[in-house]
Amino acid sequence: MTLHASLDAAALDGLVALRRDLHAHPELRFEERRTAGIVAGRLAALGLEVHSGLGGTGVVGTIRGEGPGAILLRADMDALPIAEESGVAHASRHPGRMHACGHDGHVAMLLGAADALARGPKPGGTVHLVFQPGEEGGAGALRMIEDGLLDLFPVEACFGLHNWPTLPIGHFGICAGPVMAAGVRFTILIEGRGGHAAQPHLAVDPIPVGCALVGQLQTLVSRRTDPLAAAVLSVCMFNAGSSDNVLPSSAEIRGTLRTLDGDVMARLRDGMAALVEGVSAAHGARGRVTFHGAYPLTANAPAEARFAAETMRHLVGPDAVEEPTPPNMTSEDFGFMLERRPGAYALIGTAEPGRPSPALHAPTFDFNDAAIPLGVGYWLGIARGWWGRDAA
Image (cartoon, rainbow, N blue to C red; front, side, top):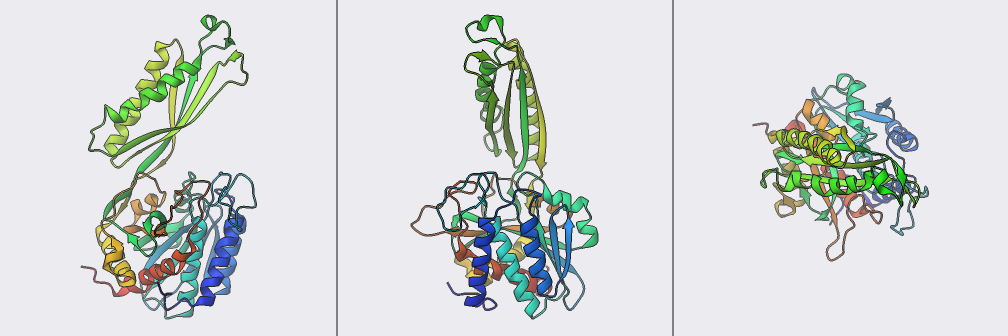
């Protein structure tokens, strides 16, 4: 693999050092003040127009090109509340939080593209570089939009890029239509009646109610959803009790629901509400479910997906481009941008041949720095190629 022509070895070393510094200092959603400060400072040093504070801690850098029209390139900045176990020298210095999804790499790649674009040649129009907070469950993209992102920076298309540990390094993935699932988080509250652990008949124990629900909820996907319709329901938290000899009065279950179809999502939500209420009542308890943190379907526009695929093929050759790449059941708030403007969300491979790659959100995850030059190359191809593309 060779470096992109606009990124020499010294520039790459600088981006790797930056990425590792960001990895060592992760910041959770809407707390990305240090990261945002570094981003804004670097953009300003390049002579770009810089707008800070959008959506809380978001940063937008603008490169004015030679003609009309504008596009948006987006990188997310936030980390996750996970204790790192990677063992790398640049591991998180802040217990309980880490860059387990590679957003540190996303920032580095887009900053590398900003540097190359600022040095020239200029793109054919305006390019807005968006560094977004709060992707991990905070809907930071929506917050930036509500704060005026697309009014202050009107664009005709928007593009996103995410590292992907199941794609080999040097490869890209793209598809038209759904690429990431619509997702919603749920909280189930089961209210029983507390009591002594030795006298369960005098109480209404919410724990067996919750245990029954954890199993029964899976039937909404396995028995009440078309097997050809992609859907997943995951219970991720179960909290109840504070003593080993007291039956609690309540229990809380939390999780997430993902689908690739809005109608399926609606049916599953209705089914969850009925199941929670019915199973709880059958045990003499009360149960209810609330939904929050909904992310829309991330769906690529056909023309923009074709353009992204051509950009990839020009960069790495046709054999290294997976098109169409299968959609994933992970969710992305970039979908909020794609609801409002056409665009494409792409995947960049980070897997080393013959070596197991930790999954996204795993405590052992670390972004593969070998992907940085290709990510920079992809962003430059998008920014410089948009105004010369075949729009047919």
